[in-house]
Length: 262
Image 1 (cartoon, rainbow, N blue to C red):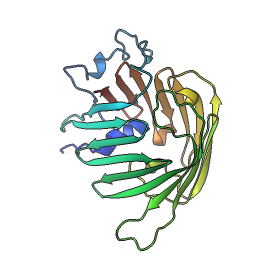
Image 2 (image 1 turned 90 degrees about the vertical axis):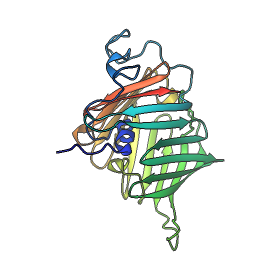
Image 3 (image 1 turned 135 degrees about the vertical axis):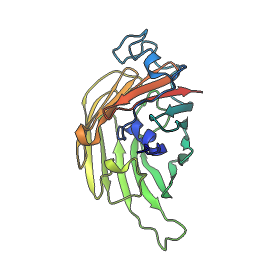
Image 4 (image 1 turned 120 degrees about the vertical axis):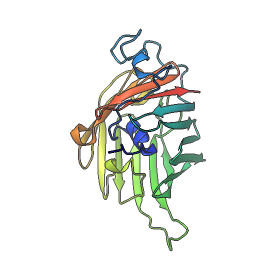
């Protein structure tokens, strides 16, 4: 039986900790080779921490990521990130968040269709997010943007708040990309808290967070230049370390992934 083709959403989902199994991630003959990267048992040891840390104080820039599954062609992503934009492009789909004043317009397209969301900051936050250039703190509303065939706006979505010690969300429903849906609250609410302080490149996010979802309780850790998540056996987890102008990590479902700043 021929292996299924690798979908762009599988690799994007790996960054969120929810992904299908990928047997190998990284090029085999150059700097993309996962097993030659310094934080994977190379010169920097096997602790998963990178002694060099981030190259610069921000993750802003253009990143190139690549993933492969044995027996199928490789899949490549381009990720562009700054204080006003987040864009992910691949051959089979796109995700774009563009900021205009206090609002983001989020547009995504997949093989089964596309949708748009409006994310509007209601109350400005005061968090310092370190290497993350997008200001995500404060109180936000997320609403579906009606499509050309919709008669009236459905007014469904979420209201969310992020501070240095807690996060919360109350949702009715929202049209989300497929790689986010396992974390969808549905009609409900969530309250997450920081349960331990820490030190990392990610400012006020540093430390350990506990976030209960419908199907699992997730733990998120920001330490040094590493982000890690654990959402139990159903949703899985991941570990991602930034080193110089590269990033790489693994997930509990067997994925290894790499990215390089251009």
